[in-house]
Length: 277
Image: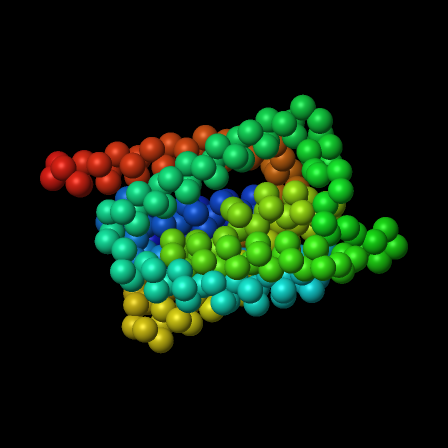
């Protein structure tokens, strides 16, 4: 039991390291299918694993100087406001509808990532032509820090709040929202976007984990080995991220996530009709 749980965590950490976005949203389906947990029970476990592994990735990014830490702090603070609201909503939603919402969000994310990766593949792996021509958050060429404006702060606050709400509601870190949104809202390079996303995910997940633990909804015997595996996966993924990341990897993840979403929808449908899936 512990070994299989840890292996699942390794898969989550590996995907999170390579994409900065997908590990969190795959954690809950893995826990649902492999361990037969409910969404409400799997969410806090996923947040623990994703938060710990994202913190490791963010620390590596900080050491390399590619984390835009002021932007990450602003998004995290607004995310910590949205996360308890999501946790409250998750407590009152039945498992079936909540799982269906999760599957629909996962399907939407996979579709958007597939479209974006195809568009970027036609230009370059850095995807610079795919970005907005005049994003609200611009990097200074000399310092490589954002030029702070009202529109930039507004965009980052809204992004953080939305990611925080989804973090509490579905047990995800929000990276699947943060990465594509930062690519549209900033002109930062992809490495900086992924590292900044990991920093936000780590901070927002910490708030969600603390709230779940205080409410007594954290399953520590399952969560700790799952989180340990995720950290191992993150460390391994960081070593190979430079060789494997790019549009082709995003396409593979998008297809896999789409299949997981379809499987979740089928499972919810079978359960609602009293069939055994």
